[in-house]
Length: 130
Image 1 (cartoon, rainbow, N blue to C red):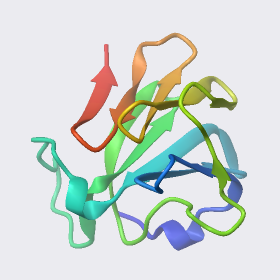
Image 2 (cartoon, helix red, strand yellow; image 1 turned 90 degrees about the vertical axis):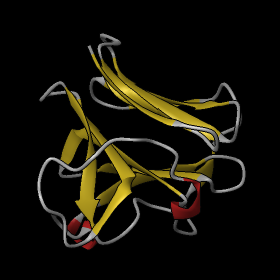
Image 3 (cartoon, rainbow, N blue to C red; image 1 turned 90 degrees about the horizontal axis):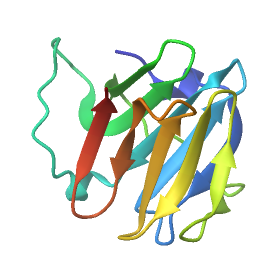
Image 4 (cartoon, rainbow, N blue to C red; image 1 turned 180 degrees about the vertical axis):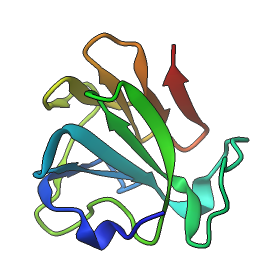
């Protein structure tokens, strides 16, 4: 568990209605994190460890570690005034990953190998670890 306030934002971006907000970590360019509005959580993943903070809305991807996960965290990723709107089909690329705005006011973030990532929108949230 950690506080995202320690996260050093490099880029921030969001889906159409701020349903999904994302940011990259300037201290770790292989990493990206996205949060979905808490009232839209529609997945059945359970925490692997006890979480005393918020759990279920924060997803992260680290291309170097080849791992996508749901984070135990106290804040949302990004969403500040400098956040950039991504329209459906638009992407942000990082060091080993790409995030693309998808239908349903969502975001899909995947490693370049397409083996790890997540897909978040109003109707469902999916972790992808092949």
